[in-house]
Length: 369
Image (cartoon, rainbow, N blue to C red; front, side):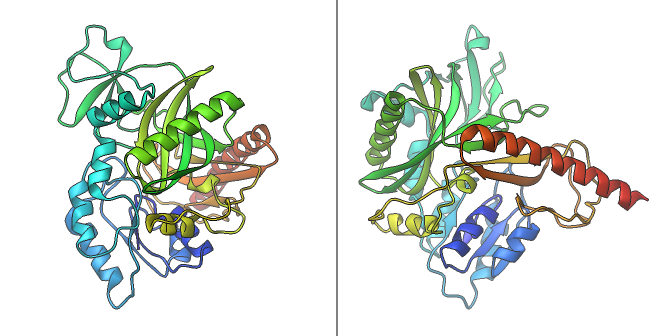
């Protein structure tokens, strides 16, 4: 079973690895319907996350009369590990234990861990800063960039903390852990797609990140050291800000995340590797990836009261159902691209994102006519 805000990427990886997927998510999009043996639309959204009662009811209904080998969770659980505890009473968690998730998502614990391992990490504080321009406000356990805001003089809300601003571009390591060892599968670059009140909202990611050998070695060591120190299992990501030869570890995402689409291996074994790593076994042979891949969210530039029927291109995923309502700034779909190098896939990705907006505009005019 899969529980994630958007379960499509995990369902796609499950299908490629030969598994039958049962999915609970917030979208019930066309792709997930095609990829899953059964799926359930659960009340909630990216910002507010899962609530226990509707999610447990949906999971129980999906699992009825099925032989479920376990549950893989995506984002949306880092600030509610009690819900993971409840899930673990009913099904095997194919991912990190709730206590492990709580440890790496606690800002004080992560800062102390980085200090012990001599990994650069931004200062954190719970006291209102004298110069707020040098600080950000984050929510412990937040994801997708929507929990980040510029610091101000207001008192912190429960679960929030200050993190000192550091310079750099976002780079993430995809790490596969078996609880003792860790294999770094590759590095990706990310970028934001700002929206009102969400200046650091996730925009997209591309692989491989542009890193020189010395910096790549340093990030690899840091990723392996911290993954081993907290006994992470399965697929995880370690996020950095890179500035020249310097870097800071920003956070750990202890579950498969938004870069799944750009780490689709040629043999379709990525999710099998995740499951086996959760059971304590890393692959004997390295996974094989395309030279370069990229993916981004295309967000709605305006409210769409009723989504028109579209002839979606094959490189678009998370396709909206006809007649569904889409709020301004909500995601319309995911666009992917692959190619021989980072520059070419970024260019192709931008072209395809523009094509989606043109396609939608044409279809909306046709529907209105």
